[in-house]
Amino acid sequence: MPSISEELLLPSTPGKFKDKSHAMHRQFYRCFASTSTMFLWALFLVALTASYLSFQSFVDSGNKYFSAARGGVHWEKQVKTSARVHRRNGFSVLVTGAAGFVGSHVSLSLKKRGDGVVGLDNFNNYYDPALKKARKKLLNSQNIFIVEGDVNDARMIARLFEIVPFTHVMHLAAQAGVRYAIENPHSYVHSNIAGLVTLLEACKNADPQPAIVWASSSSVYGLNEKAPFSESDRTDQPASLYAATKKAGEEITHTYNHIYGLSITGLRFFTVYGPWGRPDMAYFSFTRNILQGKPITIYRGKNRVDLARDFTYIDDIVKGCVASLDTAKKSTGSGGKKRAAAQYRIYNLGNTSPVTVPMMVGILERHLQVKAKKNAITMPGNGDVPFTHANISLARRELGYRPTTDLQTGLKKFVKWYLSYYGYNHGKSSS
Ligand SMILES: NC(=O)c1ccc[n+]([C@@H]2O[C@H](COP(=O)([O-])OP(=O)(O)OC[C@H]3O[C@@H](n4cnc5c(N)ncnc54)[C@H](O)[C@@H]3O)[C@@H](O)[C@H]2O)c1
Image 1 (cartoon, rainbow, N blue to C red):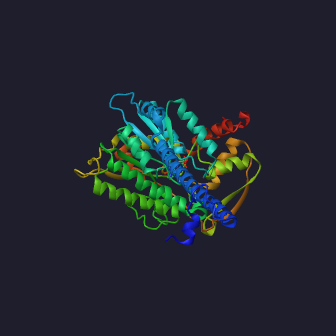
Image 2 (image 1 turned 180 degrees about the vertical axis):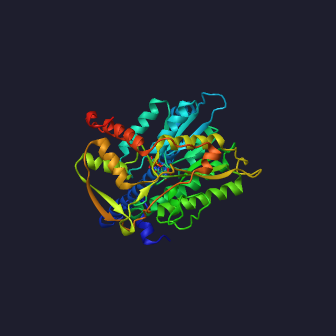
Image 3 (image 1 turned 135 degrees about the vertical axis):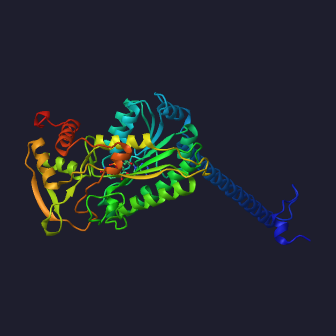
């Protein structure tokens, strides 16, 4: 015997009416039954559409990632063309941080002598990305392609190694700058530690493995007071998070050399300056402020001692980088497996003649023919060190590194570039 509700919900035999009210009830319940069925169908359709849409967006985001990682046929062609070697026994080099100050100069220099160069940069906004884009344009004009991506993107880097069997990696991508670590500490961990490990993993897995040359920093000497700084001096007293991440990089690269046979050369750069430089650095921001009639802040150390830096001109640094690539031995592993001990080196690349910051300002004033409005204050504890001074005898001996540009000459070239790049009247330059 069907339950009432079953009976009522079941369709009646067509043409049979028990009585009027019963018929009305039946009509009502039929209507209700069909409404609820429709409601269920609607619900089903909504659920179906929602799952279709979410699946579609999953596929889309996957595709987006995939196409960013793979970049398509045109992208691959650009990578291959850029990596093409145009000299006998030339290198194919992946330059990370290629839109940066040092990276752009090194890329141009390698390309000029016939090496293949593929750049990689995430164009972050730590400083004006327009300057990075302008460097990119310059590199593009010399047929150097820069892949826009992050060194933490393992899939994309693996894809690059699939397309090009890079012989060398020049790793210059990093979160640079000492003071910014107080504002954004995680950017240092992201680029200088996590990014470094991601890149080393890709190099480890590559077959053949590339030789790696990468930028450490003079800042690893931290609170070291023994001058000049030698590679054998202690580097376990960093004065900033930036320095700590560079020091960590030295230990991490050593591990990859030890376990996987990657050939590694670490370069401790000392205050690099020159055309296309970094706007966050003192010589650059002082130039901007002096030209705009704004005051500049000059830090002084304890007992009013002037800060001093071993300023190193970009062309000298580039020569050191290229010499490091030229003298790098091959990695000894392949596809993640090590075969024999590989080369591990660290060099100072400096200028061996520190100049005080007030002296540097004096040179800028002469080249700009404008007097600076100076504010001298005691250095706050923000990670800066009182002085840097490189002993470069190891690099001289093993790389043939010989810096030739003094600060006077180098700043003259910088000022000339600055005035032209920012559209100032060239007559103001002392050149
Ligand atoms: N310029 C100096 O005086 C100096 C001194 C010591 C060490 N260094 C080191 O030399 C290297 C080059 O320095 P620079 O002066 O050319 O700095 P830069 O900031 O001009 O260049 C670094 C480039 O790396 C890119 N980058 C940063 N994080 C990235 C990431 N996660 N993925 C991809 N790209 C990323 C940036 O966009 C930038 O274009 C850095 O490793 C820096 O720490 C520089």
